[in-house]
Length: 377
Image (cartoon, rainbow, N blue to C red):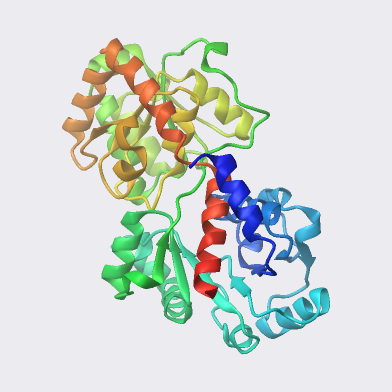
């Protein structure tokens, strides 16, 4: 179904009085970030087809808050559930029988006040990284406990990939009927789509985002650093994620690639320019609940070489060239072989662009509204 048809159907359905309230949790926990971006896009899209969409907004410095239309915002000073209910009643008066509360993170898992008011609780689970990786589990135990409570208390759960759904069913024994899969959108918030032809393709391989632990950055630069052919032709640009830490700097020195690697920061416009001019985007992560950067790269015509772990192959489909992210030699071989095959690279650019058509924020919003309505029925 085309996006316009999705939108028309949602507009027809929105004539019934559906109240949707989004919790305040995420806005004070991030200044940027994929989760707050998801909720910003979701609230924006839901409000376009459902008049009674509201977002509780505490004082915050989150850049993604700009996505939310002012008419949806309910300014609050604190985030206690009982106070939120009172504020909501003051805002719209009597609740209808069709009301949803969708918390934006696991910081507040007491949903009893909402349930007493007749609301159904929907939560979104993005991944099970904290549960799957021991080094994360040690520091994430309080968050895992809150997450578990939210999962058990929710009336319905949205997962952002089938991989996350399977993991959720495996770890928490949640029945299939209680879960819906709704993919994310992939559009960046730059000044507009910049055709790849506007930039000269440069001699660098692009990495985006955090680098520690399961993100597997060190294995990627090891594969790069032990390859004479890659080092002689390409540089590595790491966008975001902060400055290289001491361990990364030591590895870079050991590999002798100090003059072949750099770390940069910037906004979406900067990132779009990098996607549009990189020789390739490399995604070596050992696990993702979804994984937005490969789709962003594809959208701007950047060939993607990616790990075959987690949900990455599910999301990237035929749009990426895959390597075994646990095997440095395999990663090196796939990068060397693929990057010199110009016909393959050209084909992957085309397949990548086609793949991104499956992922729009408008589609995310419409499918989420359908989940709400199905739950209320």
